[in-house]
Image (tube, rainbow, N blue to C red; front, side, top):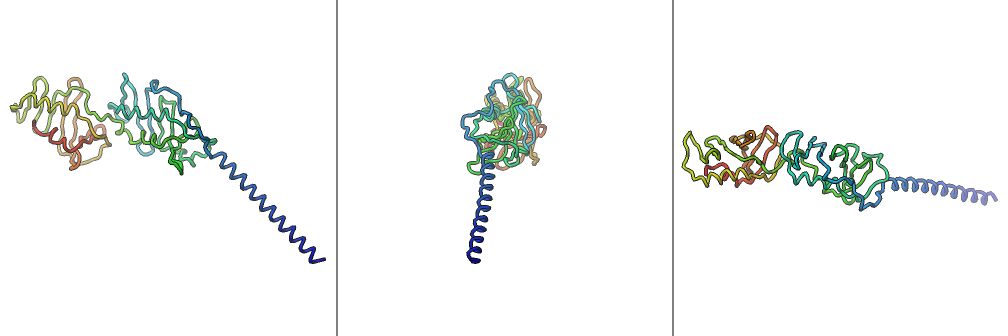
Length: 288
């Protein structure tokens, strides 16, 4: 009888242990289910982040952890970079920012309390339109590399491509075309090219015998100059300076920087430099 009683007690203990184990498993399952519920995105392929029209936007601000702050403003249908420098903006790059404004949400999340988990506690980049429509970029999703964004205190995922439209700092938003104003004179270290009042080239106080057609083409090459890209100014060896005068605008001084692979025209005053194919060097700096 004693053996039978002991056996019954053992069976009961095993059952109690199993019950406790099952209870713990059930509790853990419920906790995991709750975490999954609050962190799993809701499929939302048609929701647009903002419904505002790009036509109503006249100011854009970008704040980047790495590249700092820049501001763009629209004046007379043209976009200008106004901070940290004042210069005509690259219209194509600015138009690209509207793709962020009109981005479609791939998914949204039920909670936005733990922003750090999504890389949104300190966003990598914040783009704000008209001082009130903001898209803050965080980290990437683990599976498909979608980008987490915070809009109106709601977390979404959007195309990762859109993040790169706002990168690059202010040099990336400078217009690649150097001049809009009409050039009247180019002053090099050892000669000058004049478009007004008369087409001529001066060297050592002498007027050179160069056909007007060649001089016009030389000035035209400068007038239409468009950089491959614009970068932040980097200190380098200056080989010479070029002063360009205009009909109705202040003159501009460029530094030609030493580089074997690229032609670099720098504007230290704006802390930017324009990069061109090295093949243009002879066309732009050799006497016509």
